[in-house]
Image (tube, rainbow, N blue to C red; front, side, top):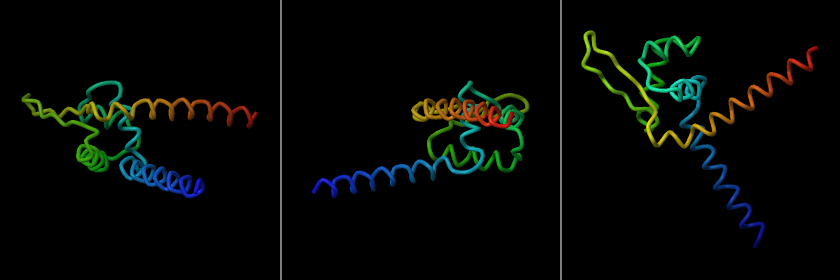
Length: 117
């Protein structure tokens, strides 16, 4: 009976992780969210900060994240019209996870560099 409970709990956790990875999948989403974690940004600012992403890919990723309620898009009535992006309150739950990924990545880079010496 206990094994059945463990199996069910494991299956639910794996399903939840798959759902999360579906939302955050790809090379750019976590990087874009990390950039927006520092505050509201114009499209062109994100494009400059996220090194290597094309404009077409950035547009696609932002639309997808907007659809998944992670990013809010605001059109400012300026001349010329400016589009600004920011994280939604819903997305704020992801920021500690992204911070943990950044910390792990920093530590991992240090370890790899140390082993190459």
